[in-house]
Length: 190
Image (tube, rainbow, N blue to C red; front, side, top):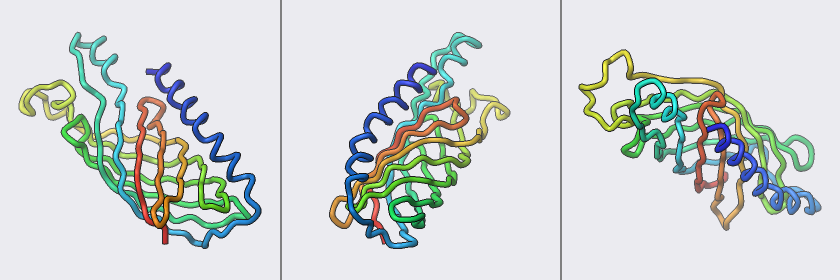
């Protein structure tokens, strides 16, 4: 899990370098302040439970959860090209180990003249885990005290690219450095 997380963060960092370089080459910024973005997102959330469950019980688990949901963000200019903001998200599991998850985060980043954004974020995420789906057993087979919620701090990085009136985005996050979550989305900026 740790090697996967490090590789995923390195890959995400490498993907943001061209965007940051392009953004730095811009002469002026046309960002409205505040800038509001609302959109749809889908992703994969590696819950990091497979090894722990296998070591403790000998069971193999499918802990790669698929999610779909939405997000809303409000960003404010900080000087000419930098911005700060706040973002909220709500996702539901798509037949996977997550029933739902939601959270909020603060964003800090750089925005180029063309509207491309590169940012880091930190916040808190609540996750309702469906252990029956992870183990591939009926709900009744899982004791009630094993079903439940997990929550922890969220840290990550993302990129948003303008596409006409829409915005395309990608994020790579971790919840408590125990999980890795990658999301792709499309949104509208106001």
